[in-house]
Amino acid sequence: MKWNETEKKQLIIFTLTAFCLPLLMGIALGISYYRGNDVSIFAVVQMYYPAAGVMLALLLTSRKEERLPKKYFTGFLVTTVILMAAALISVFTPQINWMIAQEFLMIGLTIFCLVLLLLEKKEVRARYGLKFTGKKNARSWLYVLLFLALYFARLIINGLMTGQTKEALAIFTIPEIYGAMLYLAIIFFITFTPFFGEEYGWRYFFQPLLQKRFGQKGGVLVLGVLWGLWHLPLNIFYYSPQTWQVSVAIQIVTCISLGIFFGYAYMKTENIWMVSMLHFWNNNLAAVLSGGAIGGVDVKWGDVLALLILNLVFVVFIFSKVYRKKLLDENLV
Image 1 (cartoon, rainbow, N blue to C red):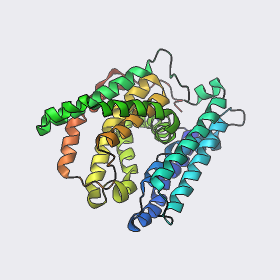
Image 2: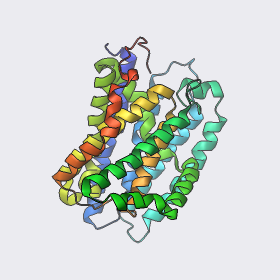
Image 3: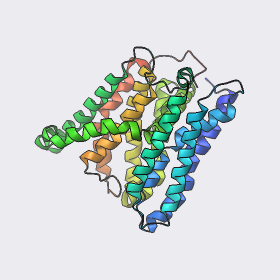
Image 4: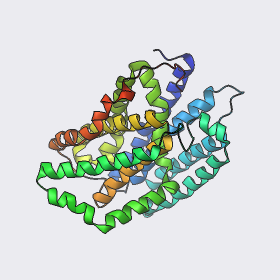
């Protein structure tokens, strides 16, 4: 099916915000990197752009009589601008510990956004995909448990592949791992905005539009590729500057495979908060298990093949029933 005129306008606004802003901010990111600064704040603020693009698209194309969650949208957009300003200021203020500063800033702004969200009427939140429970009888918590089970299954599979099965299983006997997971479960509610920032853009807005144009499976695969390429400035100047070409390939594999599972979970539940939590767990568990080493890591082409094998636990969901359903509703956004 083709996009209607409103959807085309929304896509243009979304694309200019979600995809062009990372490239423009990537210039400042590159300058900061070559100045020897900590550039992690750029990775955080980039996560806000997709949702900001959706919100701008809806605000600029809505009819006067439509009731939008304007308080929350405005607060989120203000949050995005503040964090962008902080990232630009960080280029010239290396004396400030921006890794810590950004955490406090993000927590404060997340609480601010949460208050504005709760002030919105339930029916307005539901209309724009912000309902906390998703669709009726969705049991969203089951998909969180399923994701965690698959995530740790990958660790065991990796142990089998590398001959380090005992080391992989030993993770489950480390008390600090469980303490870290409990801590993460608690702090999600005061740090959700960057993860919501991506998922409201990718899953709520972009995925349905791409599926309308390319089909259920085709749409989610196209999204995976675009989502992977969206990380390009971070691949070059943050994740793996010395081996960024390999990092891009790893990013695309990761985004396609995770996108399949996230897309599956979202279509089953229509709960953007649950998918944001999955994204939160994925990023933060990686940081916990790697000892916090996210940026500046060299990768090899062999890592791409290993990741392809490990991520099959997520890719198999492309064959699930929900991806075989035909689109009946043209008004997907």
